[in-house]
Amino acid sequence: MAKQDFYEILGISKSATKAEIKKAYRKMAIKYHPDKNPGDTTAEENFKKAAEAYEILSDENKKARYDQYGHAAFDGPQGGGGFGGGGMNMDDIFSQFGDIFGGGGFGGFGSGGGHRQARVKGSNMRIRVKLTLEEIAKGVEKKVKVRRKVQASGVKYKTCTTCNGSGQVMRVTNTILGRMQTATTCSTCSGAGEIISSKPNGADAQGMVVKEETVPINIPAGVTEGVQLKVGGKGNDAPGKNSISGDLLVLIEEVPHETLKREGTNIHYDLYVNFSEAVLGTSKEVETVTGKVKIKIEPGTQSGKILRLKGKGLPSIERYGTGDFLIHTNVWTPQELNKEQKQFFEKMLDDDNFSPNPNKSDKSFFEKVKDMFS
Image (cartoon, rainbow, N blue to C red):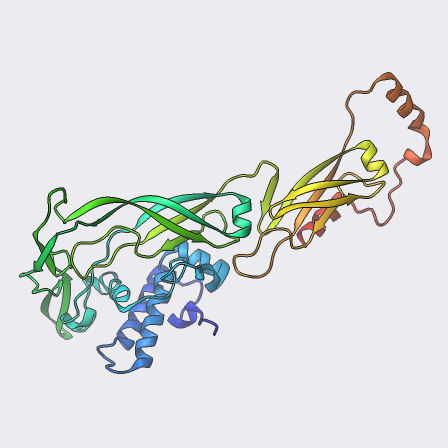
């Protein structure tokens, strides 16, 4: 089933400013908040949709990818919505409220009106992974070593007495609109609802130790330079028994190929043939991103001719098919000739067969460029 457009969910246009996006989400969150609509599954679903839309559109990088690729930009193999998109749970959603409502509450029901304990999420980690064109063509699993903070074995927690385990401190203020109740993160436990009662030797003040771990990353075929993947739960841990781990954000870097050049899903290759091969014709073996192929050079091939191997390029990350492999034929003119060779070509200077005589099927350079991009 096709996902609903994020702009449509929030009722805004693509040109909406960051402030307008935030305002639209705030309006939706108030309208469909679970505490205002107890037992209403439709309201809860709309609440989650609005939060997912806000998560993407409020982030400039995610918004740019969404504007370019749509939902396909976030349909990766990783958990939690692939590229950092959907699949949000209620804890993820309520973690946004500090930004939207200021301190996590609004009108007595933000973050559950004080009775919903926020789950503290650990910090995200960022790494870069380099990929060759061959790896991008087929997709690949990369195993990377990361040093992440995890809760030390044997650390013990007790309920925070400042917030009584809620992770938030409620405040009531009188305004011209009436009594306004807001929730702010507890400064004693930083929102965890728990504080350390004992910790083992070697752990830091938050009960954490650094651990090296090998993390497998499934990278889909067709990724591009700058795409960011998310491996859920493989960032740093947060203190507390009910906390959740941060995410591992993986930035893709493309390793330049020695002979091939990428253009979207198409691959370009410069093939050089000597003068005799261009005149007489020949066959050549060419290395593509998916293996070797044998191609035929027709007799009388002109320099600049483009041979197109359909479907031999890169797959589209939006799953719109596969690009082509474009071979640009270049006839190599000898720069030094011996006496016999020179005499031969001098005889051919006035030969009609050696005089340029393009026909209508021989396209100009600009026509070839136009065909290449069409």
